Image 1: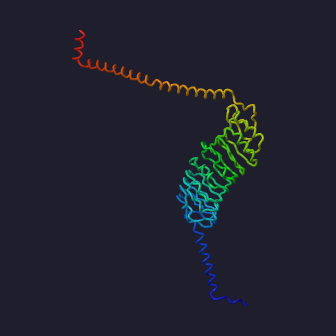
Image 2: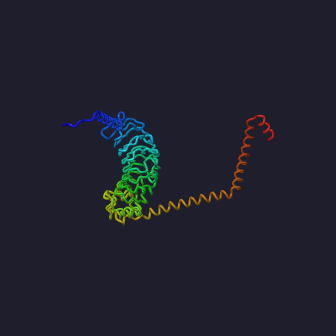
Image 3: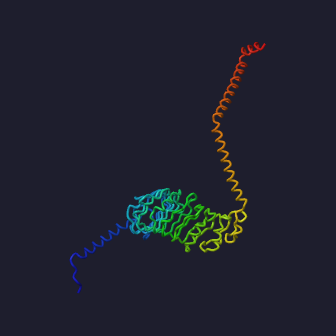
Length: 364
């Protein structure tokens, strides 16, 4: 015998389901216009957008907004809290400003791609203080090297992968830039025009890409720091190594270490006689600085000092004889004035016939 249902119970069940469906519909907002939405991913690519679309599904996990014209992002870019968003791709947007609070409503963001932009300002408070960012791609995105100031100040304690490749860091030192990133495992500095690497303290680092830079040698202190971190793997291909006495420590280290994964392909660039010679085949006897180079450098220094001394003496003589020089200049000026007056007088006589006749009669 079927149990007797209470009056009105089916209606209450139907109403409950309708309310649940309505709440679900409200929480899962519509897909932005002209974007592609599938499951938990939204793609708004090459749509010439100038701002982040606001009508994003609440359950979104991956957001691709690439190839647009979004010059800046700020607190209004993500007005609604998106708890599930972990992957955000904002490359190729001609972006210049990342202002404070830009990612404040993305508490679980783990991967952020800002590559191929021209960022002028990246505020240190753009991310939440307790952010969970693990990967940051800033390849080909620096308009100037001042963005390096962002890293020591931002709270990137969980960042494991950082890509700074293809940026111009030629005139910027990296001392202390990454020391606050205690979890950093992978760092790419490929093609950044670096000419030196000093003062590294990244015990968790496992992969370091230094290919295609302007490194001519590595300081002994840097080699010692690399050796302490035995799990570190380094790539050094594509640098113009100068094979003279300044590189002897690097050559010895390469022959006794397995940390450089492309050591077999490293070759000398300078001097010309050793160009394309593999570093692992270079002998210590070949790394002597020639006397001619030393004498030449010393000659340039000596010549510069002599010229500077001559210049100082010349200025001193001018200062001590300033009154005599002034008097000499005045005498020259007066002599020139007398000469010009005489010339002018003779010119007036020659140009006036009456004065010319008087001059002739007086001569007679």
